[in-house]
Length: 378
Image 1 (cartoon, helix red, strand yellow):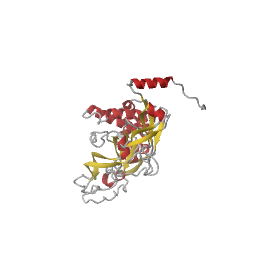
Image 2 (tube, helix red, strand yellow):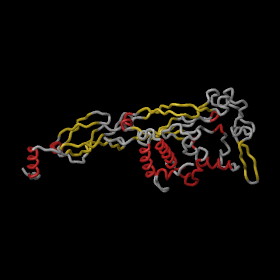
Image 3 (tube, one colour):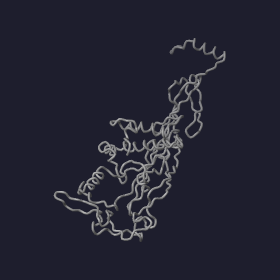
Image 4 (cartoon, helix red, strand yellow):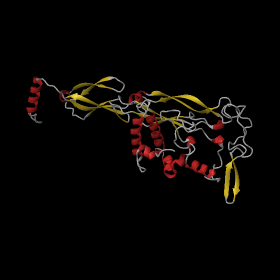
């Protein structure tokens, strides 16, 4: 049984999207496998957190759960990890199935009506959709990267197992590797119709088993399904300047569809760790630097480090106050417009010496006792 996603994330049922996202970020960082190597309980908790967030971040899935509970995702239409693999999650690090093929509430209710023997639900196109139209499920993974990786961009390698098109039959499930002809009984729809009183009944075609195509001789490798399970490796290019929470899509790289149906898509959610040196605000970066009192008062220059490990000399105007920000153009994050960058802001702090010589103490004492000049005096 799936666990209550609200309880997993520790939020109320009326929690806002922002509260849900905040709770998710806190828990996913706590239980991430990188921080808990070899800890099976942390790994299981990480999967639970990801699955719970997968439901609550999607308005349709959340509404379905609120109304139907776990039953809304029975049969693999929800966020339960490892569907189609006997309950085992082949990715370990939070990989899970998304709702494949863009399934919505109409699809869920239509299948429920078919389960009770009723057809004709949903208007146009409701009677279409034998297994030959069922696209493969979408796949979803998550990666956590450093801010520097987000600055430069990187290639992320994902290794997993999933259903792929059978090589022997080209994914059609036939012995000769060619598309099977449409079933003559159902006309290729996968369902047959009958009336019982006021109700129109729609049931899977007994001739083709709901496939919509009649396979006379099945492929011996995939036994007519058109798919086999295979280890896979995907290289996902994470672009420079990627934002925290970005979802990248690789079209057609999801799970293969049955009997020649198109494959689903592969999605990668990118999380960016907070950085100790820089705070990110859009394409701009903010770095706090302590500056000696004398430099603030008299002016001067300071050396600052950029995110790409360069050293810059930045001018500090005389009379600069603590908390002011000095702008260094073009040394922030890569912006969306190609070739452009945000800015780096140096937030000025003050460097207080902990040990003073007698001469320094005397000078500071004289300074503290002196009266500032009044403006307008000559």
